[in-house]
Structures are given as structure tokens and as C-alpha cells.
Length: 184
Ligand SMILES: [Cu+2]
Image 1: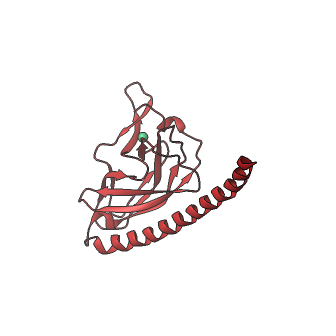
Image 2: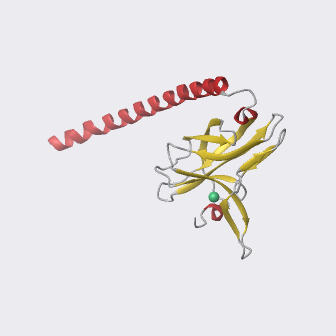
Image 3: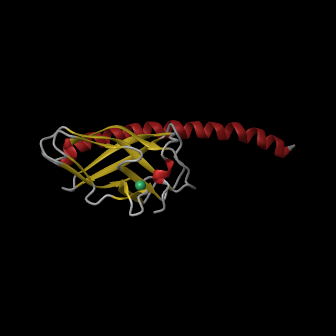
């Protein structure tokens, strides 16, 4: 009897706590986002590479922590009058190892992905698409499951040391899996 009662009591409490945590997490995220954007616009020196670039339609492929890796995509748009060179990316909340990758033809003719030398360069007034089967931000050593409907915080680091933060929604994606399940 006691165990039964405890179970019945536990269930709604657990659900309530989860909902509450979810609500807290999203409102905190929203606040952090606003703060981050405000800081970004004030901290960036005029002409900093990070200030030139806009990341549009960002997304991250849903993946389980057991898969260990996934990738982030989107379109990098440079509306400035100087080239922007992305030299590194970070997703500190979910991974310690994030690399800038390209997909290229290997020695045996098969497509392989590998770290892109020099990173991603976006010419003045130009754009650079990150897409499955092409350049992408590789996120390795996933520390948690990435579920569709959640968001991932990412940071781009530029050649001049400036940085830009953005968030990308997690989405299911079935195609071109082989491109980022190559051995690393
Ligand atoms: Cu990759």
C-alpha cells in the first residue's frame, strides 16, 4: 500500500517538475539570447569580422549522444565590405570538439569529410552555404541527446579574434547520413 501511494504521488510530482524546469530553461535561454546580442553589438569594434556576418536558417541535425556526432548548417551572409574568415566554432554546452569540415573527393574517389584548411571564408558581399554533403560545422563527442524542437548554442570565431554567437534549432534529417558518419 505504501509503495503504491508513493508511486501515485511520485508520478505527477515528476511531471510537474519537468514542466517547471522546461519553462525555466526556455525563459533563461531567451534572456541569455537578448543579453548576448546586446553584448555582441556593443563589444564588437567597428570593422570586426564578426559584425560583418549574418547566419541565416541555421539548424543542427538531431542525434543521440550514443551516435557521438552531428553537424550544424546554415547560410553565412557577409553584407560588409571586407572578407570574413571563420577559423573555429564552438558548442560548449554539448561538445568539447567542434571542427570546420568540408566534403571532398578522397584519394580513392570516394567522398570523405575532413577539416577544412583555413576554415570558411565569406567574401565581402558574398555568402557561403553550409549544407549536408558540403561544408559544415562538425560537432563531435556529443555529451547529450539532441532532440528535434530544442536549440543548440553555437559560437563562431573569426580570424581577427572576434566572435559571434547564434542559436540553431535541432531538426530531423535523414538524407546524406553517410557524409557525416565517416570515420574521424
Ligand atoms: Cu564532418
